[in-house]
Amino acid sequence: MTVGQRLAQARRDSGLSVADICSRTQIRPNVVDGIEHDDFSECGGDFAARAEIRAIAEAIGLPAEPFVDEFEATELVSDPMAAPHAADRRMAAAWGADPVPVDEITEPIPTVVTTESGADVKSAPGGEPTGMISTTATRRPRVRSNVIMLLGVALLALAVLGGYLLAFGAGGSSPRHASAPAGGSSVNTSGHHRHSASPTAGNSRRAHALRPVRISAFGPGGVRHGDHPQLAHLALGGHSNRPWHSSWYASAHFGNLQAGTGLVLDMGRKVSVKVVRVALGNAPGANLELRVGNALTLSRLHVVARATGAGRSIRLHLKPRRGRYVLLWFTKLPPDHAGTFRVSVYKIMVLGHR
Image 1: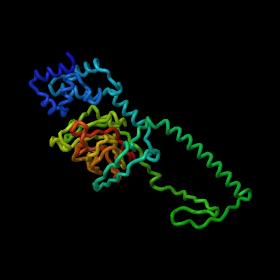
Image 2: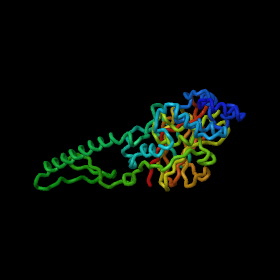
Image 3: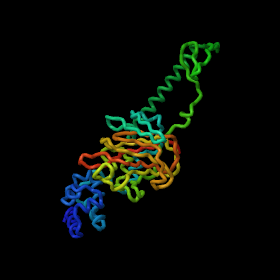
Image 4: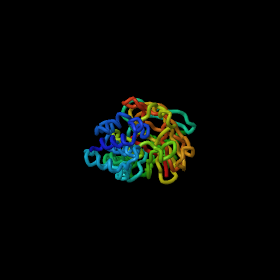
């Protein structure tokens, strides 16, 4: 017997209907029916199929590993890196070895502003999600860019030195300067604009991308009740065709089954959070809260920003807030192509200071 036939037989032997399995797992009826007929096209990929086979087996009351192992032995796995044991390697590859200064992020970012008081924001319409970067994908272009920048600086220094020698010669005399204007810059008599050298606070404390040590699915009862915990690491990968997604629900408000769902990032220690960037699926309609705190309970993770009607790419600004845990908490789901409701997340980036 195949995997699907064995699951179907076990379900019938247990006296359960397809509706019972859907109620226990939040998997859509057409997906359950497809799996029982060995049609995994509705699962959304091999990794999702493994997670759903595991959930169905556990809902019936059977050990899941024999079914998953048989599926892996008989199905062509399209992406071997999608195996659960490779999650840590994917997280390290997605974030790279070093924090990324905000100044080096050159992709266009939609203007989305949020305040700590909880004012709503909306994501920018149109276009593919922007502003989310994968350090592995941009490391090589950044090296080339830095080399070109260094060459440009060297040529500029030579030009300035040549101009200085040409202007002042051996006498060492210098032209007089006009008084500096109130803007903090001065103008010399040759007409060139020269900025004052005093640094600003923004330059001395640039926000950097902060790497989490762990990401977990999070539900109303904490990390043990999150949707599709096996897929949580995909929210750091930056691949639009392989996101983490919530379970499917009958309505935008979770079919009145629960108050929300989300993902929590463990930063390893208290950090100062300034900006959070999120890349979602294309469908707009998600309402979400950004919460920061030091305990893995919903009541002790405080709301610091909100977004309504979100889709594609959003950027949440907040007054610097310290905490170890950063929670992306969805309170309303967007529609999907199947007529149900779920949210997809394929990139989260936290910017701030250690």
